[in-house]
Image 1 (tube, helix red, strand yellow):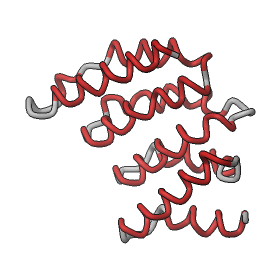
Image 2 (tube, helix red, strand yellow):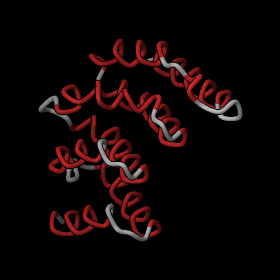
Image 3 (cartoon, helix red, strand yellow):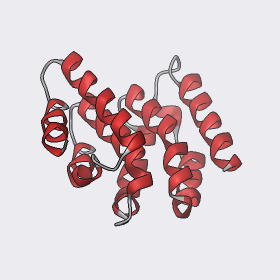
Length: 149
């Protein structure tokens, strides 16, 4: 299975976004059930630095879905980098990041306060007026979900 996971992982970087998105969906589903994507956690962390917002978002997504398998505290090590994406220059990336935070908070209760603090401090005035209410709503929803945990 690992060879297949490795091949699928490489497809996350495919120039064809449809191919990459399918790979993301497969790896996300796999991550919900097993820890077979977890060995790639360092590469997922590196994806957060990508100038390509699609690649960055894929990294954010799979890191969140692998938080429950994180026995080595890798997510804890990169949480500050992760939380910077709450106010990513691309609002779509920011919104994805915000929506994923309750998943991390659920599996990493020790990070809950850091996440809540970052959400509360987020400056959404950097976004166009049309995007601000959407990002604001995402933040409020995430805060509510995390506080329930």
